[in-house]
Amino acid sequence: MPAMFKSTNSPDTSASEGENDELKNARTTNGSQATSDTDKDTRTSLSTSLRPHARRKRIVVAMTGATGAVLGIKILIALRRLNIESHLIISKWAEATIKYETDYSPKNVRALADHVHSINDMAAPVSSGSFKTDGMVVVPCSMKTLAAISSGYCDDLISRTADVMLKERRKLVLVARETPLSEIHLRNMLSVTQSGAIIFPPVPAYYIKASSVDELSNQTVGRVLDLFDLDTADFERWEGWKRES
Image 1 (cartoon, helix red, strand yellow):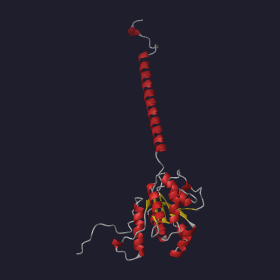
Image 2 (cartoon, rainbow, N blue to C red; image 1 turned 45 degrees about the vertical axis):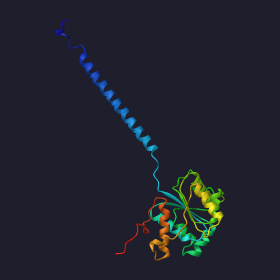
Image 3 (tube, helix red, strand yellow; image 1 turned 180 degrees about the vertical axis):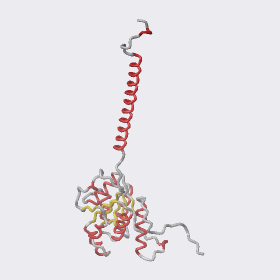
Image 4 (spheres, rainbow, N blue to C red; image 1 turned 135 degrees about the vertical axis):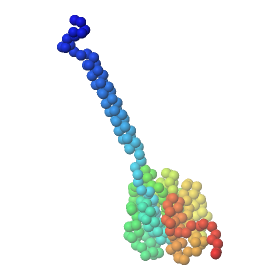
């Protein structure tokens, strides 16, 4: 049959081929889009799973029986004000010193911390290196506690947690409160310093011309927390000699 008289009953193969191409293109496009979306979702999920879980900065505060309990109390108050998560350990003799030197009771001091651990609880979270913390301050630090940390003798939670800080290479500050110092004290201080700890004697800063013991304590607390990159803004910093007008 001549082409000009082509039967209307014959299928229009050119139109069908055009439609098939369109469907094929649509499937390819949709398939690519679906693959792209899947890859994007996978990347987002993977990114989310790899992102570290955000948490508050976490500091362990240990109080021993040395004089200077007010320093530990003021550090707890400062950490609360700075929204730092605090984990408190109080020794038996620290409780006695708190009652003798301050108007606080051990119960009041414990209420200042976010978490409190018994000194005898060797299974407390802070006893493990897998429990993430940003450091520890022993304030005040007795010479007995210093000796235990220096020798690695972990017979209570304070010495064990300090040992964790050293082995995990985390910040450990010991506010050593004793005078005068014997050779044994000095050797222990040197030993823990070589192991990574920081010895911080609460030496008064007379240049601030404090009008009270409270001001001197605030300066000490502020300088201790400086070591953890925390600013209490509670004391006057040295800015050179002030000329009298």
